[in-house]
Image 1: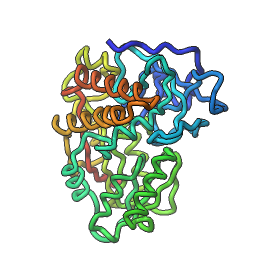
Image 2 (image 1 turned 180 degrees about the vertical axis):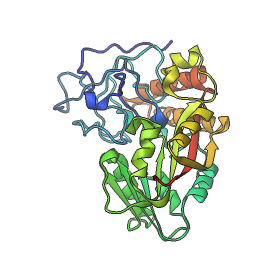
Image 3 (image 1 turned 90 degrees about the horizontal axis):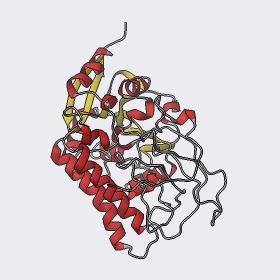
Image 4 (image 1 turned 180 degrees about the horizontal axis):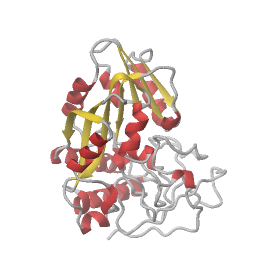
Length: 356
């Protein structure tokens, strides 16, 4: 059993950053932080804070909160990292690992943990490179077109979409400033800086002067309040005849106690058929779909936990080493002993019935 990290009292997550049931919203392939986790936002943080229990941000850089103040920990691969301290259940959910290490206060920001964890799997979803390529081949229009990625992270989808498509122009939106900076650097390095614009802002408030032929939102539905609200947000940006590529979780089978104990609720998702039926009932027409395989899930999870563990082994003297190992161990346990084979992921290419 994973030990519970018991915090000193901290402020609750502001109402604007909570789901309807009180849980802090998150972005890891459709998950949200269980409501038992408590976050606080430091007003001011010096290099040696008097109270190290002051904490960070929720885990979702897609379309949420403003930036909290940060304190810099030199020589970390992820740069500035706000402090984090959480009250966790004995078994935490997907990507919820805060870690603890040798009695030290946890200092690794969840976003930065995720950044390191995705080193070997930059697509932050259980999709292979082949699947991503197939989805883009099916979804991206031929010739001149505009693409928008709502919750683009480090821009991997848009960068890959540009391969062999010189007439594409794209915008990516994410409120994770560090991810957007990385995306811009990658685009510039690839000579695509004039073809992709990245915007560090709330995706729900993005208001461009033109529409898009394709809108992507992969694993970020929680940022808009669910799958159907995500589609509604995407529709707002579509030109007539445009399409949406959306990815979200579903239940491969009814979740058992082990899955629920790993941080889920039974009504958090529907089965695949019900998920698609709900989409169709809103006037969307499925044009293509991909259900992630168990192999894709396993590759994603082994890459996630392995990248963190490798970093920790390569930095034996780093003060965050124990926390990285703990985060990897907790995530691995939740996956192998909890949701493996039960949690599914579907990516849908959708057209839209004309509205009356």
